[in-house]
Picture 1 (cartoon, helix red, strand yellow):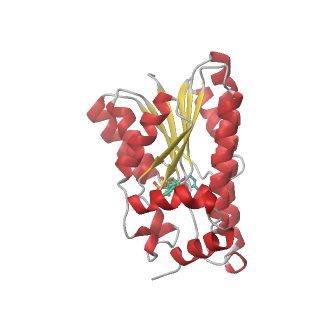
Picture 2 (cartoon, rainbow, N blue to C red):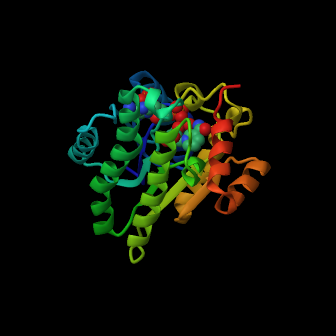
Picture 3 (tube, protein in one colour):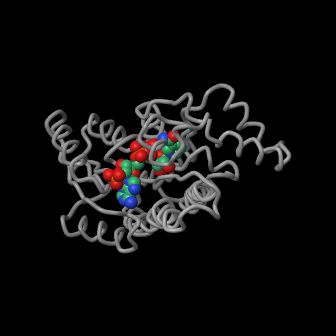
Length: 259
Ligand SMILES: NC(=O)c1ccc[n+]([C@@H]2O[C@H](COP(=O)([O-])OP(=O)(O)OC[C@H]3O[C@@H](n4cnc5c(N)ncnc54)[C@H](OP(=O)(O)O)[C@@H]3O)[C@@H](O)[C@H]2O)c1
């Protein structure tokens, strides 16, 4: 296999676009998500169009054993992963104390635990070979606390700080870790996260443009890639460190209220 990329959350949205971009450049793929039909359709299309090899692993990454099962399956198939793309994730709206705990626990297991576990499983091999790239999909939500999406924002802060920290630990290797922070992006995310009726998703970037920014940033070994923000959102992001926290919290809460 050539420069094989493992992409989680490849059945839709940003992950699917990342898979297409990688295949277009002649790279092989391992696609991971829960929906077998979507993954197999994508496999067929990419193999036909680009002549690459695509493996599908159907897995629910909220399950504690899933990352190790993926790693073992890849080892057993003798596939060498060159790019690890931890992209699967979901959000959820509502007051923390009123939300179903099982939903928030699953969110932490996917957004935080699975991403960390997959990184821990593959990174030693990358370091041993002194090559490999990791791309973690975080969010611009990682810049701030997120009332009405408290667990989601906190999970993405974890992704950003974890990715940045291990990137620095690898300063004396050729292995890089890139943290992708999309703004509101067109995908299934807004609906699955109950955010589709909020003002935050009035204007969205395309999943393709966000995936391309992330992919190019990963190839360059960039630390952070922010993608898909409107002009006014860029101004707001730049102002965050200077805003009184109570004002910031109120603004973020109001943005996440249903229209
Ligand atoms: N869209 C946005 O506005 C936005 C903004 C900032 C950050 N992000 C982040 O971008 C990433 C990709 O999201 P997206 O916007 O492309 O949304 P999406 O279209 O909903 O894609 C999410 C992907 O994650 C997979 N997934 C969900 N639960 C899973 C599970 N339990 N096990 C394995 N895979 C699972 C889904 O596949 P299955 O359902 O087939 O399992 C799907 O392929 C996420 O980490 C999200 O937090 C999105």
